[in-house]
Image 1 (cartoon, helix red, strand yellow):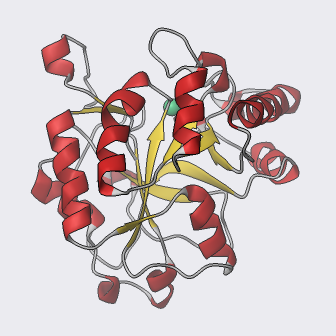
Image 2 (tube, rainbow, N blue to C red):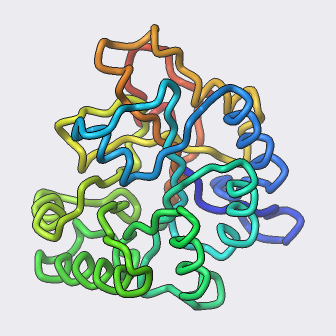
Length: 258
Ligand SMILES: [Zn+2]
C-alpha cells in the first residue's frame, strides 16, 4: 500500500507518518520485485483469483496507491510502465483535477495503459461515521463518476482511512464492487471475504531490506490456503506510525505490526 511517491524532505513537505516514499526508493523496490520474480495484479485480477476464475501467479503482488495524488502519474507510473507492472489507483472522485490530484486526462491515460482505477469514495471521508444514505451517495457517485471517466467498470474499493461498517459492506455488494481493501495489516486473504482484504504498508522509513522482508514471506511458511493468496501492498494510513519491520511468518499481521 502506497500513498505518495515523492521526496518530502527535498520538497519541504511535512510527512510525520512517512507516507511519502522517495522516488529512488520506490524504483529500487519495483526493481526488487522484478528481479525476484513477482507478478503484479490489479485488484480486478485479484478478484478473479479470489473467485477461482483465474489462476494465481507463483509470486503475486497487488500494488495499490490510495488518494489519486498527481505524483502517481508523474513519478510512480513511469517506473511501473518501464517494468511492465500493473497497479490499482484508488481515487476519491471529488478530488480529481484539483491542485494535488490527478486530472481527468491523466486518469484516462492510466486506465488505457492497464492501471486499474478504483474508488476511494467520493469525498474521502470516514464512511462508518455517516448515515447509510450518505454512505450510499459516496459509493454510488464515485463509482459512476469514475466509470464515465475511464469507460471501464469500477469494481474495486478502498475505505478512506479504513473506516467502514456493515452498511458499507452491503452497499459495496449492491453496487457491484468485487473487492475492497482495508488498512488492516496482513498478507493472507480469505477468498470468501473479498470486502475486507488486508494490505502491507510501505513507508519512507523502510529500506530495501525491510521492504523485501515485508513483502517476501515464503509461501511454505504460511497456511495451506496461502498459495493462492495475493499479497497486497498499500499506502500508509493517516496517523498510524510504523512499527516492526515485518511479521513472523504464519500469522496475520496485527495492528501493532504496522
Ligand atoms: Zn486515503
